Length: 110
Ligand SMILES: [Zn+2]
Image (cartoon, rainbow, N blue to C red; front, side, top):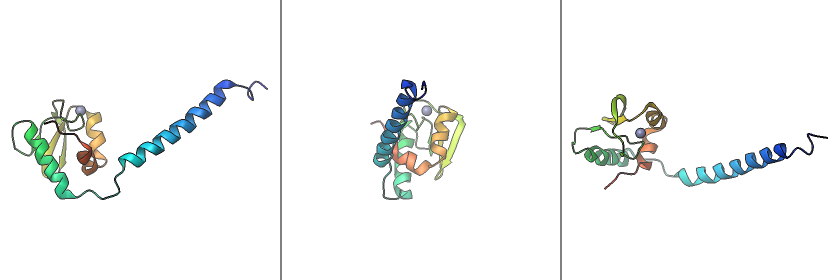
């Protein structure tokens, strides 16, 4: 009797449903249907490389933070000849799974 009318159980079910609906919406928006072209990724890497003022195939600012943070050589990921320095292991992990896709989603400041 207590369980059947327990408002916590009802609320939990509602939140799970809401979360499922929201995440379904999100993944539709962020998953592009066209495959990422390597040429586009390299072009973007070249732009990101220039952000630190040196064109040396080392992106020394954190790409995961949209290049707003200084990266560290101890958290480095090699992508298409470029060395990406991340500010933290967590930022690097986000890029490790699908670097091409993450790079295309990166915002480069002007
Ligand atoms: Zn970062």
